[in-house]
Length: 232
Image (cartoon, rainbow, N blue to C red; front, top):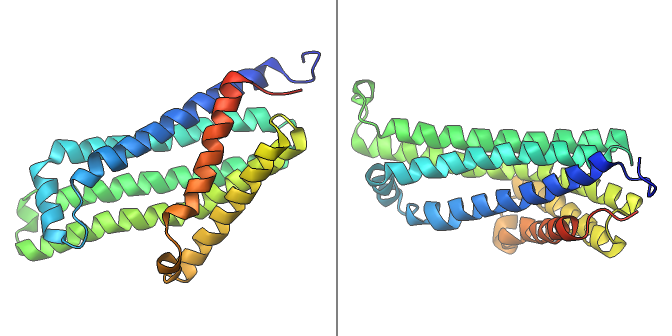
């Protein structure tokens, strides 16, 4: 332990968590806004599937990004556990478990995307279904992947809520930052559960507001850890 009461392994893990969090966000933003939105045509399943067939390499790159993001979440949960376990081991373990559930959701998203590709592959065993049926099933698989994200989002919100509580207790980061993270993360968890129970919630509240405040908190925290480090 250093004279400040913070282990050097915690400081290294904090840097790893910061870099991993930022890289993961870049990957998922590039995947969604830079790649997937070039393929998806809202309200037109046939056009979407035609784009998937015509740009399979692009679609497979999206899948690879989904898997990379899930792997980044696993690295992030391990690093945050090292940082926050001395503050509250049980809570840190719970946060890691919640975040692991979110990582599993991203594996499900990737698998459903691969299923969509298989449905439009033209394989012999698919000849029993006509083109319209195959396109509908493929679009359904892609939609199920989107549902997988919102099924995993409450767990990410819970993980971030627990971590924000530990950040607040530890004072490793400023309390104004951990307090804002606690509010944003709790909002994400509660609103994500509300959206699952009441789908109309998504029309009353823009879905981007579910996780955007929490994402902003994680970006600010990552830069703080990267340049300021843990405070004694």
